Image 1 (cartoon, rainbow, N blue to C red):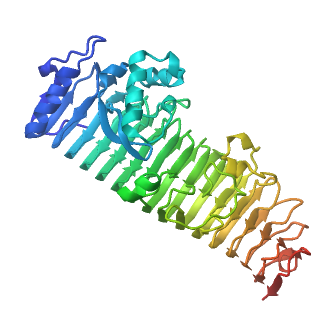
Image 2 (cartoon, rainbow, N blue to C red):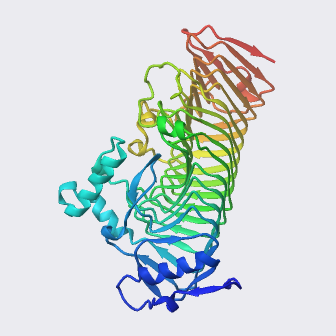
Image 3 (cartoon, helix red, strand yellow):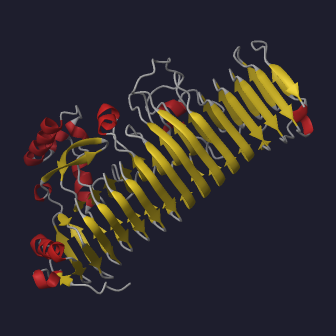
Length: 515
């Protein structure tokens, strides 16, 4: 990779030396400011430069040569207060380490490293509030007064992201390594036409709020050929929280993720829980997720409101994951909570497609739960292979997932209007391979299962169940139907015991149709 043939602003010509531990913020920022006036390239040579927070202006390429490092200073007083968005709310917080704001035509590239010196901030985060420096306590109290969100100051969520792209257009980040972020690593908010390509994003596993890439109320975002090893969600898509998020009304949309490698973290691709401004038109393909708690995770809760719709996940390999597929309307709330009135705060998830996915050595095949007052809609699986034989650790799961977790190595589905499976194979350590509750329409076409001492499919209060072309060699019933609201079960073109092995429990008046 070579430096673009444009006007070049070498930070050494502005006084940066890279030969000590003293911050060289003034010299580096002077080069960035000069470049923003005329356009061109800010050149960072192959040394380590300690710096305070920096701001990148429009028509600027920031180029880090191989071996170059920008290491941000560990000193909260060096970071002024700015207005931005933190965890779904517009509010005051610390200036991002590298800030692209209100800018167009920006590129951050090269083969160097941007290091957020996160350990300094993580230690402060872990320090009890009363033991933090007095000046820091005063800053956090100031944020609390200005924000009026009711947040607990001790949570300290206003730490600076490593790289924030805000209210900007046509921004590219490529080639570089972004590591050790104080808060989220890379945050794209209120922006459009943003490309992240061939980037390495690395945070330790214990980094608090150490997300990899957060796409927040932004459109036309492309992430490709990127490596992420994060302490929290790897790629997260958000659009604001609750009433304020709905009032702002800026969706996250037209997002593509392809050819990415994710190792470790809470989730490979995560949507929500801040989704009040809507999330739509997301395509994820040709990725691998390894040692993440979840693979694809959609999470929301009552009072979020908003719609998540039209999502496609294709050609993904997952390994050593707690749960590869999660759609959870009960994020941090009990699964057995009573229905509530439908309001503008009732969220909706619809039109989600999973295709050509293999998940090996996972703990439970899937967890899909809409809300009893508003069922989620249109979930489909095609050409999916799941090996759910890994030992369970329910302590890692959301309360909604952990509640009544007995025999849930298989896929669990509740309060979904319509869900379909075509050419799906599930190997479950115990329990039914699929369990459905309070669901309207279940379609299973060409499924193969391996279960012992339990039916392959269990339906409870499912209005209509349609099974076609399935194969099961177990001696137990293929399907067990229960619940007074379970009605019609149709079975066609099945082989082996499937055609006859349907058990209807005494509490159900379900009818079985065979074709």
